[in-house]
Length: 123
Image 1 (spheres, rainbow, N blue to C red):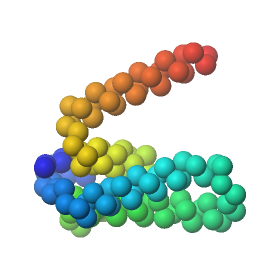
Image 2 (cartoon, helix red, strand yellow):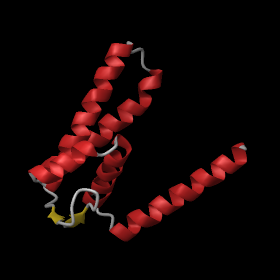
Image 3 (cartoon, helix red, strand yellow):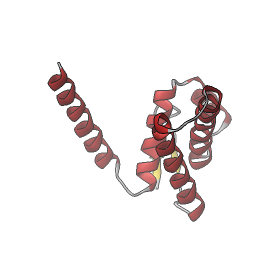
Image 4 (cartoon, rainbow, N blue to C red):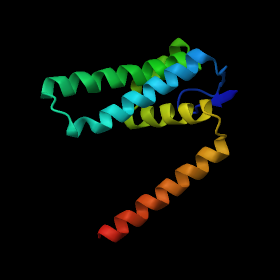
């Protein structure tokens, strides 16, 4: 499959969805879900910081390995804000799991509309 991430380069990245890629995808999703549950955990502030640091490293490694980023693309990835990096990772995850760019755009639009509606109800 071809995945293009404009924030990194104009190049289309060829990704073969191997067992290794699927395992890495599921591992990253699991880690992200565990981080979301951190509020319920009894972690010290130091443990929380270490967990967050590991998440950043794992997200960046996942993107780098899956898209086979060259040095210039890795440098661009290093300079992105973390929110942008997570968006790239989510896009790659969804593409690896079989969604098209159109499917992802539709899901993103629906999520944005739901967020807008939720904010309006809270106001």
